[in-house]
Image (cartoon, one colour):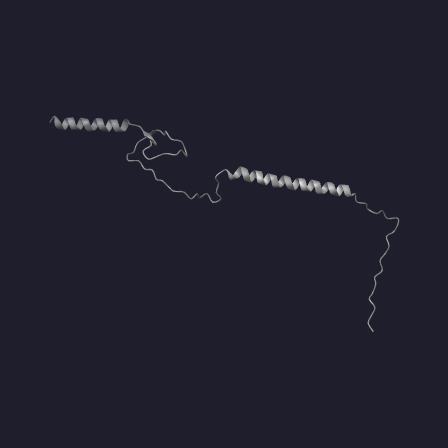
Length: 120
């Protein structure tokens, strides 16, 4: 024959111990507050993403774009930069204005040398 299953004895709750009563309305308020916090967090993430999506940013500080190298034909001291940063420029636009003093002196020296050679 088979052995009968064992039954464990369960103690009855004592009548002098208080029974904890959970108020269903406080539980409902907790769920409402949790839901509102969750909705606020989602709204904050969506708002922050919307604000940041309109700005150019990069994680590795490299931006893939064509490079344009600008080099002067002559050297000189810059006295004016008539363009601003990130301004669109076309071919032939004035980018910098150089101090003409050195060039005027060089021209005067060359003209003086030329007149000296002609007058010999």
